[in-house]
Image (cartoon, rainbow, N blue to C red; front, side, top):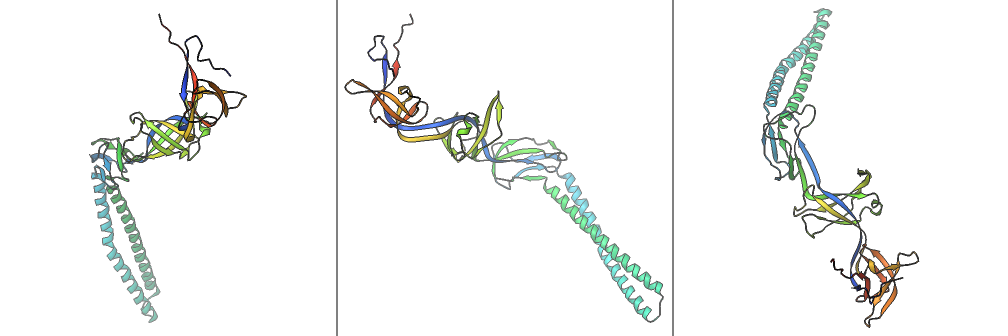
Length: 352
């Protein structure tokens, strides 16, 4: 084990660090983006020209609020035609019912006469056929009335679809159409706008294949944003998705976790610097990794050069815990306040 002596004649000086306590975290870092906790694309179920758009991007809407109206002229005419046709069918019902009742009376009379041998069997057969025909005509009419009622209900539903209401509470984050635009809902549902619930945000982080094996569901995580300064948002891993993203031949796996956004600071597509906490220690004795000299192939034991108060240095073995790549946790061998040599500061050289 070798450290340069502080008294070497080349002007170099040892870097002396005092052992202090603090938090050490072993983390996996990744870059992520913000997504709304939930969202819905609001579309049109009928074709027509967009007459009114009651909201704009950034507006907050409650469930059931009117969002837009589509020209309903065609739907109104269809409803009117369906109502008229259904009314005509219903108007015929009383006549058909009366015809059935008359056929019943005629059959009853023919049966009484046949018992008295006052009519022929042909007249009785005619009465039976007339009743069957009247009942069949009434049944056909009832079927047309049911069909007309269903058709009217469908047309009324289509008319109602011309007014579009918010299916959920949230913020309008995108508007895909403008007033006056013609919407065609025949082949696919045209999207008018998107509503998102921004009270909870989801962080989608891309973790490299080399690090994803260190993560697990429930692991603590936190992130910072470009404009958030030193503020940290904390959560825990919800999902590790098995479908990779390959970027420039590098494989990344999406890792998701959610955080509350009560103050609305977090917005969709924000960039996040994410830290997944693999292991951590609070109030740990911290020694710089530059002060450690390993031997015998062990990573949990190292030697440090301790600077004594009397100026005498001591080489001491210490037992180590977790690391954040800058500091390591000291489990045994050092005390708070002791000083160690963490490296050598080279002398300044005159560029001239």
